[in-house]
Image 1: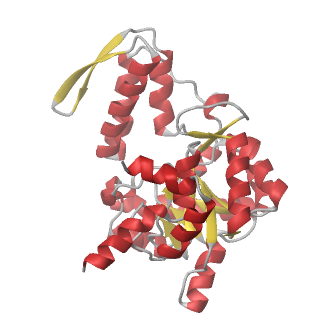
Image 2: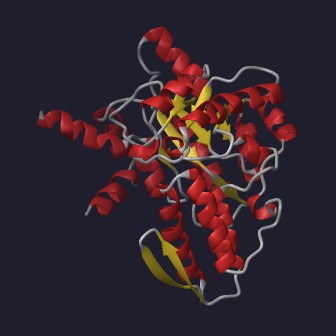
Length: 333
């Protein structure tokens, strides 16, 4: 029923205009992670042709601002800018430079690119990619893997089962500390008899600092996504300053000027705490993005909405359909 209502609304420009008037006019902060060439559809990625369509829709009805500009407006006016969209891209993958950046440049649009510094330096893989690579490249048709108190058998004979195994294993990784996560991933790689290359192959490659500097000179705000991409509430408190503050220092040294925006890895409610937010403030960041609770708008927990190739879902989100529940809660009080 909900999907049918969404399709009916997003299929009509009149309904979309009414939706814009009915719900709170807050900035629409969109989050992307990976991109593919035109016509190539992959899970958890947005193709360049679909991104082109999305950007044209945004340009028709909204003003695109960087996250820094949005927060500066808030700090000066005490209110968020109206009819605005903030485009954010996480992690630091090279497909941002290959496929998204040209579309942004073509339209002279701004975005914020949150980079994981040791990933850009070539020192680490991002941990979800380690799991995906190991599962994709194993010769085993099944694997028995212990996760805490559970021992599970994973069939691996086709892409569907491999995707299910990746989801279960990555969910477990999210639930444990960074140190245990690294140990667990090494165990999985051993069980699957897969040796991890020292540097991520092209499928998982990071942007280079030269590419990041180029983007930074052409409307792309560069922000920090930590050094190693850990869930910050699960790292040793003594390492918080390193993950947060040191990453800021590295980026500023590389691009030649200060940065103001931070992105907490992952977005589950327990992935940050007061100590984490305090570390972000202490490092000198002016804002941070986190989570999907559109009813909570604070400079250090700015909510975002994930974007896919689904056009109805995109139109629903960009026209604030996700905020309808906020209106309902307010009316119920």
